[in-house]
Image (cartoon, rainbow, N blue to C red; front, side):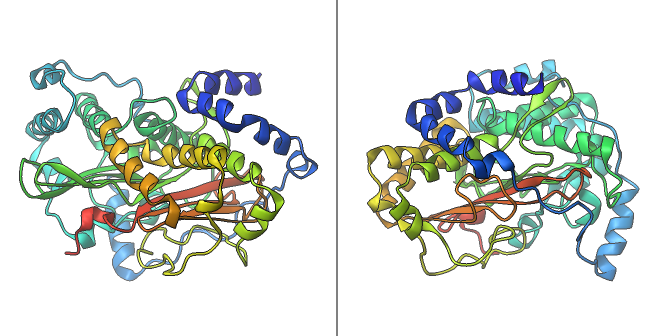
Length: 409
């Protein structure tokens, strides 16, 4: 039974254990409530679609379509090539640079032109929730344009920059790729490249011990942007995640459930609030999507709304930190720890807000955290691509002090 497989898959993960210990009982009470049991499905898919393209973007899209494919890259099972042994087994920045050099040495000149680009803030801002053909400005080489060996090197590079935990970091990215492969089997919507083949990988700026560069990885419902300055991580945001179908699906030999632990962590937190606290946390209006999404870098409000985190008790604060970890925990452990230390120190000036139902199960349900540095949003909207009635999430982590590594040009 799918539900059993889904339950088994999550039960052993560290994040699931933290939720069980910190407040799963509170979440369970909500999940059996009439509101959650009845469900809140969105309207049938098909409404909306990609925004109209400019003449320039239409030309870019046509050129990109000639490169795009519809086959799976099967990145989870792609082997890391034997040549990677040259880079040693000590994880970190030095090993990542070595793996990047191996990749650049192995690709053709044509591929290298797409892979290695100059850094500019403008180029870094070209990320989107849309699939490849609907947003042709994304820089980079398509994963499907690389050989199996080269994809194995990309995998090794990304594993150096991300968490190795189940449902976090690289594993979450794999599941997002699987979602596009799934959509490719069921959708007649847009025909703009639903396939893991069409996810982009790029080096914006030259990786090295000095200078500025970004490790860019993005596609439909995915944007990963680690910016390095003089050999150190200067910023890990914008970090965008989405998925359809949701909350789980089977594809490429596994049950996939990206973003379920993010949703569950926030639902557990909201369920642990008192009625009075929820009344203060509730935001005015309806949020049909996240605010600080693609090409919306200035959308974060200057003022704070919702419930001051300083009013939470110890258990509630721990639940909030668990929710933050589901985002920050996508990057490597040491780098994630530094962000968690910063955000923990800023909790007295951080606010929690939500709109819709606290179960985060219905269309237009929305939750966010807003602090001096931290901005996290999670939003549910109706399905667009799977031709199934239901909802899917968009979510983003931003850092107001080091988005894009603090670069402005």
